[in-house]
Length: 77
Image (tube, rainbow, N blue to C red; front, side, top):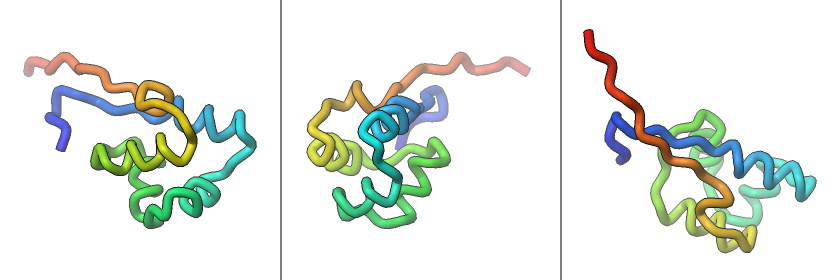
């Protein structure tokens, strides 16, 4: 699990799917991922590295083509 000080963003993945005229269902079919995992991606939630690698393999791309990971600055109360 990603520590709270990091945030993941899958905007690159969605842009890549749009460029290839694919939908989330197409991605699910290609990767054999469950609908729950696709839903997690859609909500910007962290997923296992193996999941991301499976997507990269299916789309013939690299991790930095589908995900951004950024460190967030903790807010002081």
